[in-house]
Amino acid sequence: MIPIIEKINEILMQDVNRKFVKDLETNQWHSKRTINNQIEKIQQLYIENHLYSGDSIIIGLPNSYRFILFYLAALKSGITITSVNSQISKRELGTLLERHSYQAIILEDERSELLQSANQLLTTFTRIELNFDFFHGHFLVNLSENSKICVQGLTSSSNALLMYTSGTTGEPKAVGISYEQLLAAVDNISASHQLVREDITYVCLPLFHINAQVISLISTILTDGKLVIGKKFSASHFWGIIESERITWVSVAPAILTILLKKAKENQVINHSLRFIRSASAPLAPTIAHDFETKFKTIVIESYGMTEGASQLCVNPLPPERHILGSVGKPFGIELKVVDEYDIEQFPNQIGEIVVRGKSIIQQYQNNAASESFYNGWFYTGDSGYLNEDGYLFVVGRKKEMINRGGEKISPYEVENVILDHHYVDSVAVIPVKDDVVGQRAAAFVVLTSDIDQQLSEVKALLNQHCHTELSSFKCPELYFFVDELPVGPTGKVQRQKVIEKYLSKGASA
Image 1: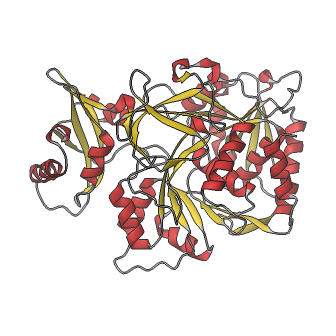
Image 2: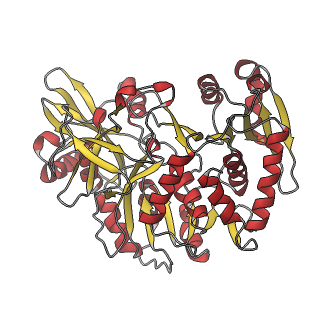
Image 3: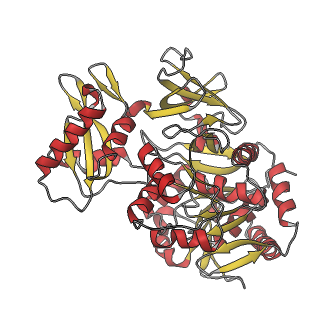
């Protein structure tokens, strides 16, 4: 049997009456016995609808207990999972169906309008109502035209997950994560976070994302911890859940930390059991991390990962080791180096491209796309950064997002962190703008806080002065755009290309 499936089975068969998963939407705990029985019913449903190992399925459900059941049933059945936003659009679903041969889709009943375009997306399909005794209101779309004649043999190198990169600098690439890579990632996460049976985690990031799936869900299951599932993050309920459910750790995005800080009351005291809060999915400003630790008396552990590595690559150590604010920590369970444009390894504190290799990291994209990203066993991440003398990694930006001003390289992350320090700023994105003289100039798109009583010209002067105090002159933004919002992805990561499309393409004025 595949080791990760064997481990899941072993965990679920131990202490079967133990409460294991709580769905906050229904306020109900579910025991291992119940979970196992319901997973077996879903596995039988898959078989009845000719879904076998080697097949591929799309799961389009929100964060919930039912997501976990369908997910684990597919994982244990050897069915490759592509998890998608439950609010996926018709166009996005169509793109997925064009890119890969899926045998089925699981949707909530409220998304039935997607089938109205079946003639465009699906030529031959069967809709199967899922009215289990434990929940209903879902259906499975069986894509009979894609049915396979024979069952494929399952091995550790078979794809457990088929996911797509965020496509921040180009077309999203298909990433097949094998059972072996998935288990290696979970082992790294469990060891680096010292996860144990007594841990209880709160899942508030979207489960269709690699972070929540591998770090929160699978790592907790395989260490026999408990899961509390929230449909989505809620600032007004977050600390109440942390306290009442005795949560010991939680994985979040920087946007969540920022929101919680802004919503905090001046004399608010939280009586929590947190060992740490883990931040990933986007850069975390050191000031936000510091203020959060000070305000809420808990450790913020920043990390670094990507879909191609089945989630985590680096993480800051837990006490008594030192965690460094502004760093994404040390490589854990993988090899990492920083190289220049000639593939020569850089000395400490020299910026270059981050390259990695290890058991959890893919060897190629599906259909051998972007093959230039893989060389001699190493994956070239496209991220720029440097290692300090103690082996802590600092990420300074995407290689393609670095701003080249007349030969001087500017890290958008560094400039953003400085601007975020100003109390007038709610959020910011720094991107390059073409220039005929120096090639590119830095432009700051700023969302201001709501308590400003000064003219924008005065605010701009204050921000400019602040940047020139904290940065070398060439790094300071030369253009400021004040906007109402910044487009972000599901984990709070600013989508820079969409900033350009939304504002610059429409002729925004500085």
